[in-house]
Amino acid sequence: MSPTADLVLTGGPVHTVDPARSRATSVAVRDGRIVAVGHDEVRELIGPRTEVVDLKGKLLLPGFQDAHVHPQGAGLELGLCHLADTVDPAEYLRRIGEYADRNPDVEWITGGGWSLEAFPGGAPTAEALDAIVPDRPVFLPNRDHHGAWVNSRALERAGIDARTPDPADGRIERDADGNPTGMLQEGAVHLVGKLVPDPTPEDQLAALLRAQAVLHSYGVTAWQDAIVGAYANMADPAPSYLAALDQGLLTARVVGALWWDRERGAEQIPELLARREELHRDRFRAGTVKVMQDGIAENHTAAMLTPYLTGCGCSSDNSGISFVEPGELKKYVTELDASGFQVHFHALGDRAVREALDAVESARTANGWRDTRHHLAHLQVVHPHDVPRFRALGASANLQMLWAAHEPQMDELTLPFLGAERGARQYPFGDLLRAGATLAAGSDWPVSSPDPFQAIHVAVNRVSPGAPEGTPEFLPGQRLDLGTALAAYTAGSAHVNHLDDITGSITVGKSADLVVLDRDPFAGPPEEIAATRVLETFVEGRRVHTADDA
Image (cartoon, rainbow, N blue to C red; front, side):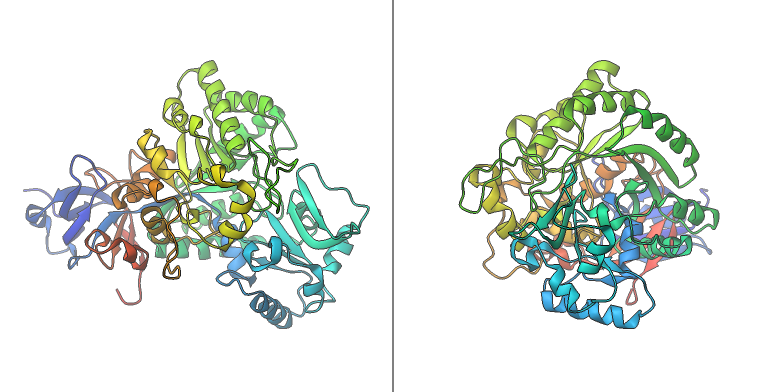
C-alpha cells in the first residue's frame, strides 16, 4: 500500500501544462513534491493526516513564473509616494502634497509610478511640482523607470541648468530657451537619482517581503529579478535576498539577472563571475546577466532600424539609442555565453532586437550550442525577417503581454511617431508562436501590473481589461489562445529560469508549486479572463497565500 499524501487537491479541473496529459481532476503531494496526478484513483492516497482541498470546480494551475520583474523596487514604491493606478495629473499633485505633509522630516520626496499619458508629450514640469513642494527636492520616476519628474530644487541640487549637456545615453527636456523643464529621460535620470539617499537595509528587506507577498497573492511562485546590481536610483536587491534567505523568509524561487554596466566593457566579466558564485544559494542564484540595449518608444530612445516620425508625420534624424555598441555587444555576449551565463536583453525597438539576436548568433557560432537559454524581453517592434531567428538561435521571447493594447500611451505617444508599417509590427506574439519561438512571460512590475491574468487577458483579447466599449482590438492577428498564454507564464518562464526540471507543470516528481483560482477561465468568455482571481498559492505544498474570501 502506497504511503498516504500530505496534501490532496481534488474536485478539479486541473490544467497541468503537460502536453502528455493536459487535464486531470486530482493531485497528491508528499514532502513538497507531486506524487500523483489523475482522477478518483488519487483519492486512495488520502489518509487520516492528509489535508484535502476541495477545488469545487475551480481550476488548479502550476505556479506562475514572472520572467521579468523588479520586486524590491516595486515594494519600495508601495511604501513611498505611490502614484500608480491613476492617470489624473491633479490626483498626482494631491498625492505628492499629501505625502510631503505626512513626512515633514523626509529630505527627498520620492516614489513614482506616474504615467506618461497623463501629460502633453509625456513631459510634466518642475513648475507644477514647485507649487506643491517648493522647499525640498522631488524625484519621481515614471512607471517605466526610463524617465523622472523633478522639481526646481532637485535640478538645483544636481547643478542642472541650461548649460548642462545631455549625457550620451539620455536627454534633459528643455524649453525654447534651453532651460530644463523638469523631465529627465534615460541616462539623464541618474544626474539627480544619484543624489537621492539610499534606503536602509531594513527598508529594502521590508520592500522585498512586501513585494513577495503581492506576487504570491497573484499566484507567482518564482521569478527572474531583471536587475540585480545598482542601477540609476535603484538599490542593489542582492543583500535583501541574502538577508531573506538567512532569516528563512524567501519562499519564492528567484533567478537574479546581474546588471551589465554599459559604461564599462569586458573587464567587468570576472566581477560578474565572482558575484555568480557569491549569490548561488538554495532559492536564489544569479546565473544571468541583464543587458539593456535600448530605451522605450514613447520617449524615442528605443533603437529603431529607421528614424522616428515627427509630429507632422515627417522623418526625423532620431532612430533611438543603442546603449551598447553592436560590435562590442557581440564580443561581450560571446564571452558571457562561454562562461555559462544566460543573457537577458532589454530589446524594445527593431534595431535593438536585431542587435541582440546578432549577438546570440555570434555566441552560437563561436561557442556552439550551450544550454544558456538567452532571452529577449519587451519586443515591442520586431522586423519580420527577425521573427524566425528566435527559433533558429534558441532565443526565447520574453513577452510583457499587458502592453499589446490600444491605450493613450500607445495611441498618442507611440503610433503617430512609428508610422503605419512599423506600428503594425508591434508585439507580434502570434507570429513568434507560429515561427516556433519559445514564449515566456513577465510583468515588468512596477512598470505594469504584476497580475498574470491582466496580461493574459490582453494576450488573448488584444484589448485592455476595462477598456471602454468599442475599443478596437490591437493587431488581433497576433492573439494567443488561453492555453498558450498560460503556458508562457508557467512552463515557458520555467524554461527561461532553468527551473523546468522541477517546476512549470503539474507533473509527478515536480515541486508542488500550485495555484487555486476562483473559477475555470477556460469555461468562461475570453472577455472575463481578467476577472480571474487567485484563492490560494502553494510553494512545495506549503501555503504562501490565502485570499480573505477563500
